[in-house]
Every structure is written in structure tokens, then in C-alpha cells.
Length: 587
Image (spheres, rainbow, N blue to C red):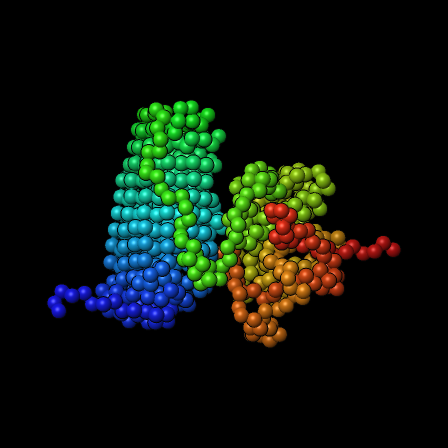
């Protein structure tokens, strides 16, 4: 009949969904009526299409590895009532949008090591009812967008790196309503470059707790961020509730908690500072205000900043319960292969930088969490730093920073393969410091970008070159790890140390290869496993290391000891390994 809406095309599995996305006509509705879809190749909405969840408990799209994702490349697309999760994602987002006038409704972004959504150079995106949880990076990252409308509730964001839950870069005419709990960065960050818009025309409503800041506005002096209104309810911030760096014509109403943190409510920074703006601070009760309301080196010109009469919360109360129902979480974990973990905090001091505070568990793997809030070092890096301080400092220093600043590294030659990691700022203070990258198409010793390529199985270094080699979760990705251990022994000076980590499997009695590397081509012995590399790529795991690794290395002339990494209740979370090239016996 004229005017009737055709029924949706239904996809019952990941393969049929991929076919429909590739073949469905313009304007088609693709219904997802199964509980779980395993996606193994990129899905690109290249025509105006709608993906609509029909399964009663919300269908789950599981992106099976870091090389696949869901992206929108055509204007007018819609995604409704679906959940996205991923295995192996690092830099890649769950959903990438690069087209105008798209709409998201009731989309959940969950359990991924990368970001939730990236949006670039778009106009008119409406995202209602988004839920984000347990993401490694931002929940939403938008660049150069106009007329963005966003409503999001998120918890446990930026677990892997310090990042805001919502990051808006060079955007204009946008509105955001956000409820964020637990983020290793700001709840919302608004950034503007010198090439950004003249005015933001931004409207924000933010409720935030257990965040670095509720709102950060960051611009450059030549082009301050101009034209922003925000209503904020903040609690349990670490740095400040609001950071304003080079802003103008800003209106902020900040509701303070009944027990405000000791950190200031507002910080001003930047050469331009804050001008022609209004900030109203409302305590929850009389006397319930931070000792320092406004701080920072930024200028303050033509502003009205005042403490208003006490009042209860300015915004409606929200549900503080779980983000998702228990039955859905069980399905999600089954689809993702994830296991639940117990979140907790431990007091302590960082063995790298000396920061003191509470270390929070935000990841299933305890060795990959409990991060320092200052230098971001996780438990495994802090374990390595403790060993370095103990072995090199002779009990004179408490932290790696103190060790380096005290000159204890000045006479040492150190090799630390790789390009990232929190140990580097201090290890670079050695008398000789080498870092390296690896490219299988280049010979060891080939220079690039101030570093050299080094194959750990055959480096270009002379024998007896280094006092210390430090590797962090590298050897499981080396094609022939015992050839690399022999090479480490060769380049170490007698008495030199190799301080290293791998994800040891204490349940595994014997170290085992996952890949047959006896020939020129890799032959999988076990299903392939990939870890995220230091950049956007993925690295194949060649070896599972077991409890016998110390005995195996001793047989190669590298006596090896273990320093255990302990978490809460003295639970074993991993180990730092220390291999030594023995000095010649005295004659």
C-alpha cells in the first residue's frame, strides 16, 4: 500500500549483517534480532542506512579484533538500541562517524581498550541515551564538529591512559549532558586551537564524581575559548572541579558537594587567563566549601566570581545504580570473553615519581592497573622501578626519580627497547641511554627519527655494551625469545642486569611456544593471541612463559630471580624478573 514502511531486513549473524551492510539499498532498515553478532571485518555504512536492535535484551556487536570496527561514512545514518564491545582494540574506536546528520539512540559502548566513539568534521550529530563503561580511552572524541547534541552516562572511562570521558576539539554550537563517574581525566574537556572557531556557543550540563576535573576548557592566548555556559555538579575531584585556561565570556554555575575535596574548586591558567566571565559557586550547606575557591597563575580580568548562598543539588537526582542490568552484563561478558573484577583502592607511594595517594584498580589484570595518578605507571612498571632502585641505589633512594636526580645513573649505559613507557624520563638520565624501534624490513642499527632499529635476536651493539637492559612486556612478542635472551647476555657487561617483565602464567609449569618459527613462515600451534603494541598496531604473542623460565635462562648463563608483585591481601599479581650476566670468577 502507498505510504507503508517496508519491514526491516533482518540479520541473524555477523556474516549476514556484513552482507546486508554491503548490499542493502539506500534508506534500508537492518534489524538485529539475535543476541550476539561477532564482527570479524570492518563494517562501513556507505549509504543512508539504519541499524536497529530488535532483540529484547539489546543485541551485542562484538568486534573480534583490533582490525575491525563500525564506521559511518554516509549522511543520515541511524544506529539504535545496540551495544558495541571489542577484543584487542587499542587506538581504534568502537564507532567512527564521518558524515552529517546522523543519529544514535540508546547505544552502549562497553569493555574496550580504545575509545568509544570518534566523530570528525561532522554537522548535526544527535546522540541520545549513550552509555559508556570500562573503556581504555575517551567515551567520545569529537573534532571540528558543528551542531553536536550529546547525552551520555559513563562510568570507568580512560582506564588505559589519562584522557577525558568526553573530549571536544575545535567544535562549535554543541550541547552536552553528561553524568560521569570514575574517569582518569576530566569528565568533559573542551579544547580550541588557534585554527578553531571564533565562538564555541556551547551549553553543558555535567554531573561528575571521582574524576580529575569535572570540566576543562583549554585554548591558546591568541584565540581564547569564547561563549560557553555550564551547569556542573561535582564531587571527589582530584585536581580541581573546573579548569579554565584562556577563556572569555564563560558562564558557570558550580554546585559543590557536602564534603568538598581539599583541592580548589576553580583553577585559572594561561597568559590570557579568564575574562568577562561569571562563575557562581553554590555549596551544598553552609560552610561546605573548599578552603581555596579559585587558584592558579592565570589572569582574571572583568570577571564576577562569587560564593552564592548554600543550596541543595541544582540538577535533578539521577540513578547511581549499575549502568546495565545484570542479565545483560552476563551476556556481554560471555560475548567479550571478559571476566568481572573487584574494584578497590590501595594507599601507597609511587616508586617512579614519588606521588603519594590511593592507587585504584581499573582493569581485570592487576599488573596492568593500580596506576599512579601522576606519572601513570601501572603496578608492573612500579615493580620494575622498585627493583632498579634497590639494585642500583643501595638503599639510598626511595624512588626512581630520586635515584636519577642523585646521579646514580650517570655512570651507567642503559638500553631500553621500545618507544614508550613511564620509566624513560628517568632512565634517559644515564650516561648512555639507547632506545630502539623494530621494523622487520630494516637491518639492526638503521637510524630513524633519532633512534635505531634493533632486532633483539641480533642487535647492532658491540659485546659488553650495557650495564642495564630494561624490557617491559616485549619478550612474549619476540619470534625466537631464547635467541634474544642470548643476545641480551652478549651485550650486557659482566655483572650487568636485565630487568624485565612478561605476562607470566603461574599455572603453566613449562614455557610453551604458541607459534612454530623453525621455518621462514610462522605456523600457528595455538590460536593466535595479540596484544596492543605501543602504537596503534597489534603484536602477535609467540610464547607463553611458565614457572620454568628461571631454570631455562640459568642454563643459558643468565641466572634469573623473581620479585613478586603483590596486590590487595598479598595476592600475587605478577613478577619482575632480574637476569644477571655473571662476572668472571676471580682467579
